[in-house]
Image (tube, rainbow, N blue to C red; front, side, top):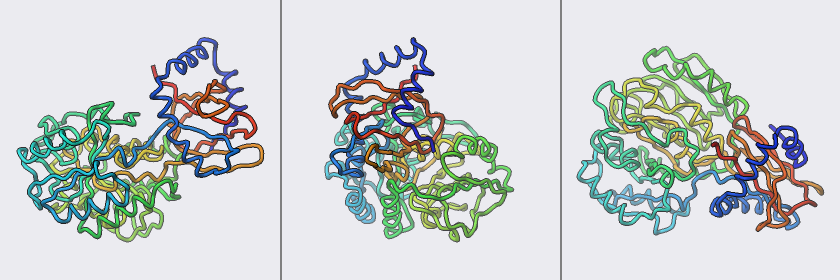
Length: 444
């Protein structure tokens, strides 16, 4: 854990910033748009709730993580299970009625026709406001729109350049490993995730796990399995790099085995086999992410291999699988370092998972979209200072500003570089300024 006091910010700034760099940082801050400044205030309420004492300073951090108002919930009125799941999810996540869009198409089929999809799309285009950044789809079937996965079709629109027959690459996603906090605004796509499960009760239990996970910072382990299945073990060659990148952010272990069993603390579990044995013997923490690299894990109800739904039934909150043969291109499966990094950095499940797949046209995302285990802050206070711990500072350069009150005027008091994901601690003096804000310096 890195602790940074205001004095530390200032001294670090004086030591490391050459005059040209200091001028550039000040220029960037001076030219920041009012919208960006307002967005940076989004987390003040988190600190206010943690510290009700009106004498305490407030801190705003860069906004990270989609909220319920950023999501549209799509319900298929022709499917009673979809209607029940949609009603339950809207209630649990506080999704406003105007963000719940009712459509109708044939239920219970593996694949939706392109014609039915275009009809549904017309309804969404007419009813979904531009402020909506992502979709929750309240059903298990269909999981495909002809040759595309249903989540990719709703994200991109139906487009055969995202499909493949045999071992071919497909169109990449501009959202891959993006720093964006607003995918529709920044990239013109709305990532989608299925609220899916073996039955309605199972989906509700998965939703509950996602809701419970919010801002809990669960203390578990990330398990990276290197298996004997050479064709499906291709992600194992990335494991060492992932551990170097994220070992300071979260405990993880690499295991040479075809199965993980009887573990009490599974937060991440990635493997590569056709059929995953022993998954039900483990305890998955709320918000857990688990998937396996195989051909058709995204054939949710009719796969000859382990289905992504089986991860959810075992206790995971999110998973992924391909709906048509992807071959073993790593680009068509979650990049482990990307999904873990963004999730551990406070993003929601839907953001972190979607950003981790470079070519998601054939892959289906399942889980509770707004699960956000690593968001929020941890706050403690003494008579002289407030200590704030957070994971919401992505790798990059930041400046700290302070002001007598929330509306400013703000002045720059320090600068720091965050080298990687993990918990950072800021110490703010109680008797100095009333408001502090941390702004990330844009990469130019």
